[in-house]
Image 1: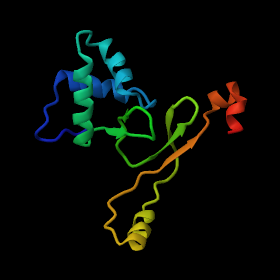
Image 2: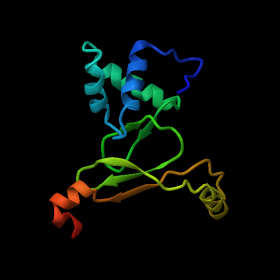
Image 3: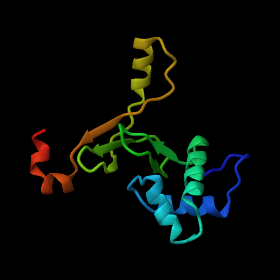
Image 4: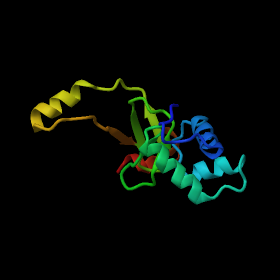
Length: 138
């Protein structure tokens, strides 16, 4: 993880990054707060929120703003896709090669200068489909 010249790696930021890097669950800010409090019991929720937002703005982490749910954060900044459970809201990475040629196609069709894309898949995770078979009917 590379910090920008204008952003210092404070102890709080280092611990937030370390804790976020330990999980692949794409936690919410509250979940990151709960993880960080185990190591920094006196840290405030506002401090965690501000640092997550700042690190997302500077590209150190990803902020996932998925349809109608709480923001989630991801330590993996390499281009990749996500899949979200419509039942429980869990977000996972999906091992699908990033389609870089889609940017050119979109640019040709729209006459925009396309700088990137975001694709999110949705479905029902295996845990929810095994406990809620009616979720598959919708």
